[in-house]
Image 1: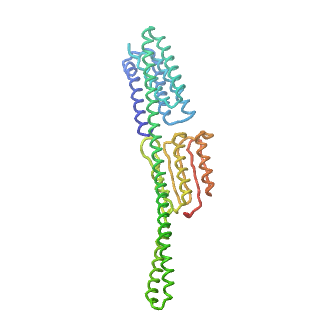
Image 2: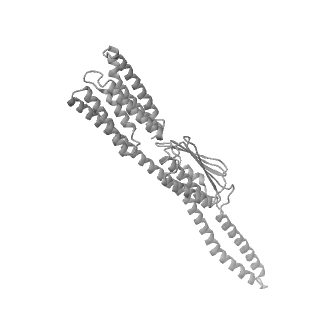
Image 3: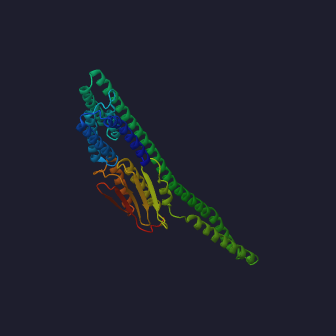
Amino acid sequence: MNSADRQHVGALGYIAIAVAAAPVAWTTALGEHEATLRVAAWWTTTAGFVATYALSHRVTGTTQIVTLIAHALLALLANWLIPIAIPGVALTGILLVVVAGGIHALPRRIGLLWVSIQTIGLLLIYLEAWPAPIALAAGIAYGAMQFVVYTARNLAALELERRLDIESRLRELESTRDLLSETVAAAERARVARDLHDVMGHHLVALRLHLEAASESETASTHVEEASGIARHLLADVRGIVATVRERPGVRLDTALSTLSTEGPGPSVEVMIDPDLPDLSEPLAEALLRAAQEGVTNARKHAKATRISIHLAADRLSIVDDGRWLGEPHEAAGEGLRGIHERCTALGCTVTIEHGANDGTQLQIAFPAGVPSP
């Protein structure tokens, strides 16, 4: 989810909190609550709820789970302090619906259990304050709202993840296609050069040999020598054309990498390419492209990064993200990183990975400067 989507969801949560707080604010202004200490505790609890709600959108990992637990407990406490703000109106239960919308990132079983516990806790609070039929109706209604919001957020997150995965794979295919097209063009140039050399060159050499043999005749020596000179020049020209066709620039890795750049939903991928890049061999260019693709995939899927930067310099490729470090790499990510290390080190590159507790990961591949194309 990109920053715009987060802001949209966050705004909906604040609106829901405002709806829950409006009746209490109204009755407090009218002085209908006698237990002023209880009202003050409710406002303090709700302020804490707002603070944990804002914090839950900025933290990850264990800190996020602790924040969500505090978030749920504050919502239940607010419902216990003032379950009914206006006779017949109990909107504080909306706070639990807000909590349910924030736990979509947890595993499904934990999320469903979480919503169930919240619903049971709210139902017990209502049973203490209301007659059983009304308490059951209100508790079940808020429970259903929680399950609906939780399921909707899960489906939205799953749809976004699949869409991002498809877009990522398409970009990888496009970048691979760009690199492959240069390889195919190089093979075609080599084929044309080989045909020119094998066919035309063979006939020109034969022509030259016959003309040289005929030049020994006294009657035709002048014309034959002239024709022989032309044949020599023609053969030299053909060899020059063959040499020119065989010459080709090194693989343009920058073109393939540029395809990975994104600015839409999901983490943004910025590609920076230094000017005057050296020509790279096809194996090295392919290894660096695969490393960039793997780095982007790991940062997006496993580290949950929001920003990824790819920098191609004259002697190194760097992939930097702002995601969280997972300690021991995820199994799939670990295989990918091992593959990068094996592929790149076999070509004389140096692979380094640097990471911090919360400041992302940097994958850097240093390759020998000026590696010639084969």
